[in-house]
Length: 264
Ligand SMILES: O=C(O)c1ccccc1NCC(=O)[C@H](O)[C@H](O)COP(=O)(O)O
View 1 (tube, rainbow, N blue to C red):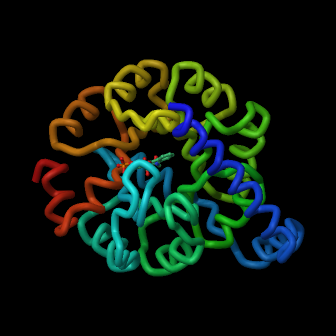
View 2 (cartoon, rainbow, N blue to C red):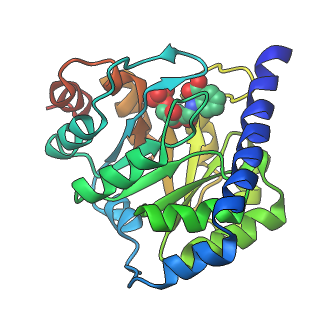
């Protein structure tokens, strides 16, 4: 457990160092000027896509993960994103963390330019700089993880996201974090069924925490969703959207897998 706990700490530490390095090439002020220089969509397409009737599917494009190692050695990320869109994904989640997930900012930029569904920047946001960057890359939403942020950061960064027309998917794993997310003004709460410290996956965590999330907040269940039975369980408990990575990434025919999960 100690070693795994260090991975989350190491991801956060590495991300902070990377952002500080990036700021030397492009300062926050310069980044903000770039964002402000083009007309920005302010209609929250990610939120809209998740509010449609029925369960929405957020399909994840990821090359590797700490728990699984390399998932897709050749990683045709644009083809995968297009397949997801054609298969009826409501949104796409793109990992940009470069070390443990082997993600890249370019993957996000190119995917957002290629597909017409909204794209979530899935990373470990530890600095407002990363939110401005997400906007510049063409993301429609950003992941904010309660476990690595203070109450003040959560509140300020949700507000910053909304001011930029970005949705914030606020990720929680415990009762206390649901309350913090609500307090901070989250409009979308995602329960990560994976404990980021132990990597244990249990979709009953979503079922348990859903009771604490009021109807008007969009409820997303993330991680470890593998079967039609998982989907049916989550639907019975009022889930609005599911975020699925590995199950789709490991399927040769992603459309067939998504249809199976949808019960088609
Ligand atoms: O997936 C991991 O090993 C992991 C480890 C530490 C922090 C985050 C991690 N994953 C990020 C995610 O939350 C998932 O990519 C996402 O929810 C999809 O999960 P899955 O469907 O199980 O691939």
